[in-house]
Image (tube, rainbow, N blue to C red; front, top):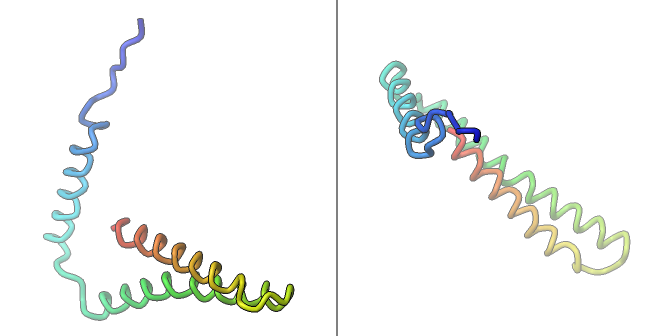
Length: 97
């Protein structure tokens, strides 16, 4: 019979989260708060992460509509798909830090 000898402290999600929080806190103590310019840059990047997929979905939907002469049949679903992708990407980017 094979026993799992891995350390539970390495696999327990709570302990992993606490260690990550501690390392972020120690980094904050070393480096301090971010500058205003850096915060504005992060907000700008977050905006582009959200806007680019939304516009790409809209442009792709309009292209399909123009190609198949379907009015706005594909524009709305592609816009919503772009919004979802942009929102998901922004969420992942915000929570990666």
